[in-house]
Image (cartoon, rainbow, N blue to C red; front, side, top):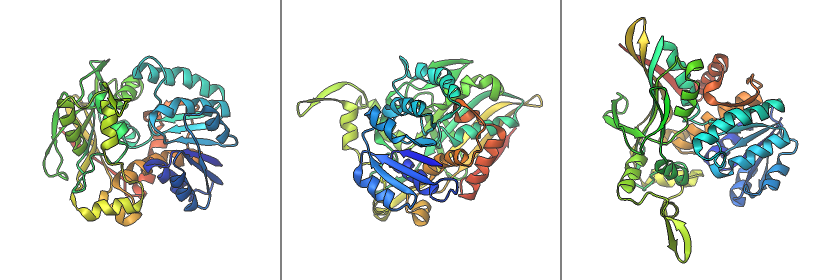
Length: 404
């Protein structure tokens, strides 16, 4: 099997390295515009060859797919449509850590088009496209599927993500600041009383207290895919749930909310050195880039780690045997120091990269029995069990807590 991995950042590089150990994979092509990073990654993996490409050039993207069985898209969102269209033309299976921008008049319209029109187009070529395949969305969609099994009827589903990692070396985001801050500007989507609605960024706070965090935490509305996926499939897969929210908290949220409250987090056009840009892009350019290699991660740790406590919890409020019940489905993953000491990466690289790779592993081991385009909450129970079994083997574990 020949696999193309587009993007050699935190997620893409993890997928490439893991694919090295998959017997069914004969060749890995890793491609990015960063020639130095491509060369470094390809030289460290015996099955890999590197290609320097412009992801904005459709013809380049399309040519590199010739002869590939699977395309893994770990590029920024704005390149998604190019890659998706090229994969269709090349008749490749397709995996995306997120989803695409630039399809439809709005994000919601684009998602619906992907899950209907693009679904039909992938069915016509007898291939599978799987979107939302990281941690959130990704393993948290599987967590939601597992959590609803403990109720007869679901009322509300919360996807709660708290990233409490804090270091003395200022690092507000351990993934792309571009993605993080743009998500904080966008109006979140939620399902409320069975209808898709837009909420306000940083609004509708909830508080939770998880024993392994050691303090009460606050989580707020945040633009993410899960409410759309789960809400769309609420009747068939999620016990006809009425309300679905994605809630986010931690170091990055605290930083982003301060900027938002000061009016600095916006897409207003400004001029910088005679060039038109936005306040958001100007801000992103000044932020530290997420670490991508062991030397960068080590330097941050050596400077001092303040906190490593994080949480990923799918919470389902519902009814079981006629009585109210709350199900907490916790996903536990290694912290920053453990991830570096054992694998030379950050906690974000380890968790999101490996959670994404496990979807790739389902592909390359022929464990996915679907055609068309689906989101990661739509896998079968058998596929979810296999995924979680593999996750446990790499220290990404789950725990169910039921409160009556």
